[in-house]
Image (cartoon, rainbow, N blue to C red; front, side, top):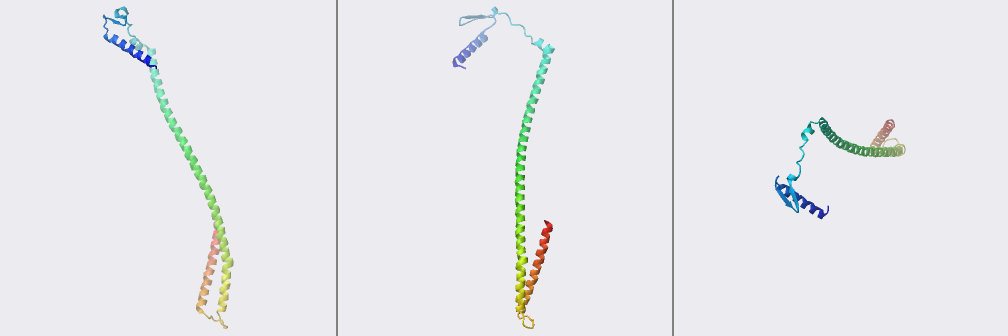
Length: 191
């Protein structure tokens, strides 16, 4: 609003309030060439508020307005609850997507780990086969050769301690081959 209009309105309001506060029912006032005499005006009409409150149509309208106001308040509450529920559903969907992504990642990692385990088992089996089928028989042959060279012409051992050690090595190798054979069978039945 423009400052000139504000000033005019404030002056006009001040003048009107001064005139009504200073006026009495019989007095005459002179305000900027305007003469105010309350007797020159007709009395105001009597208030009709008593008839309005008795009118059944107005009572019904008041009741209807009150009920509509209550309905409006309920709709506002319902809208707030609906917004909270929508936010909850949105958050839940986001959380579910995160969980599904994590589960897919875990499933992929499990599959990769399973492949790695199979590869490691194949690697171990190759090494066991190498030991069981090549190195252990070769070592047995070497021990047999050493034990034959450890005998004199009559078949008696030249070095008894060496013979005991070689026999102990033979027993350990047989146990190892039996254990490896047993574990290999278990692995095949387990898989």
